[in-house]
Length: 156
Image (cartoon, rainbow, N blue to C red; front, side, top):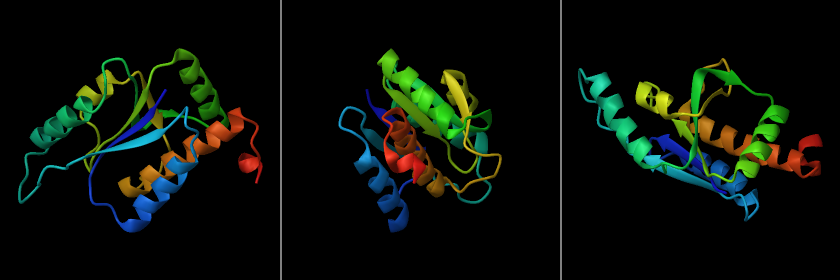
């Protein structure tokens, strides 16, 4: 099983890339965490946001496989504690499908991405910068995995 983070946006600052890589590196071989970066369409002056969001959605959905469990990261999604995420992770592992986590661009995810999603998850009621979401999600997935293995990281 693979965990795939599909994000709109490229060319992140070095601290974002390093933060994500650090937690992805810690994941076990049987549960790799991969990143797919989707190019954000040029917005220019007076952009047609709905057209741009549809374009982003097409690329985001193309980065997922039909067989993937899809989790859309949405402010209006269901909040999970770290322990609940660990339970989800165990459930997903038993299911055996790859899991794709979708993170939209500055305008969020298009409705077609939310419709494709099997689950919608809210990391926080706060508005988080998209680069930070990558690191936060990677760390929480690593922490959830450590809980499932009774590893001391979670208790530190």
